[in-house]
Image (tube, rainbow, N blue to C red; front, side):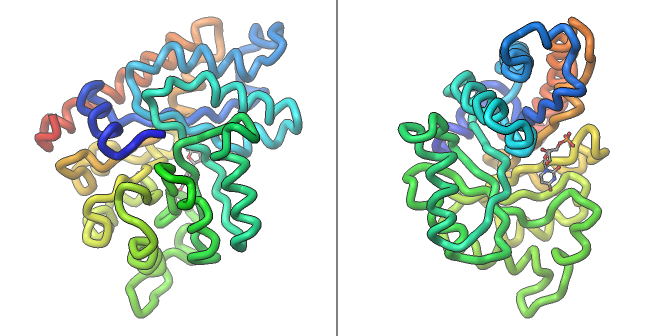
Length: 277
Ligand SMILES: O=c1ccn([C@@H]2O[C@H](COP(=O)(O)O)[C@@H](O)[C@H]2O)c(=O)[nH]1
């Protein structure tokens, strides 16, 4: 469990708001790792060891594990167990279903005694509304991270539709703010949508925003900070492929560290500029 207060403390202490995405594709991980019983776990462990002082969160995306069946699920459980306790652990599962089904998803990712996984936070699609989100909030201290404005090209299909409360993504934020406060709810906003951050801060002045899309998707960290940073930082900027696949040789963990370090240095500058540190 990681509270808002602990998250902000960690950001100030480590001078970073980097979230590293653990999206291991068996086709892309270095060949020499295939000699290990669980190559994915070995890959993740070495990435974590090489980067844990440079980031405040790790975000395994469930798809990369679920696509491998039982072995993948075991890799996810063992990766969860290996994550440093001081870092926010986010399962990027993008779940969303009726209440009793959401209860099962919440148990799957939050109830460590039952499943071996007790992530601090989960990503949720808000399309089905209140009853698809509130079951996760029953787990005291856990975070729900709601998709608001995604980094994807397809975000324009629904998220910009006009409603009586503004664009659909604005209506999502206004409604979700009535379910819990900024100590329990974060929003996903893509780095590729930096022009919308000022607007989003009108509705979510205090919420942390999980921001994917820097690195492989071409989003600008500088622009995200220009329009999105708050006095408490309020940002978790994710990079997955840009860090974990920096090299596919034996030096992959060092190369990942070098990429993470570049982002950490930029983040430290932004934190200073915004007087967070
Ligand atoms: O709007 C969204 C929501 C989630 N994601 C996820 O974040 C990472 C991004 O990976 P990169 O390799 O850094 O592009 C990945 O797990 C996505 O599923 C997103 O990209 N956009």
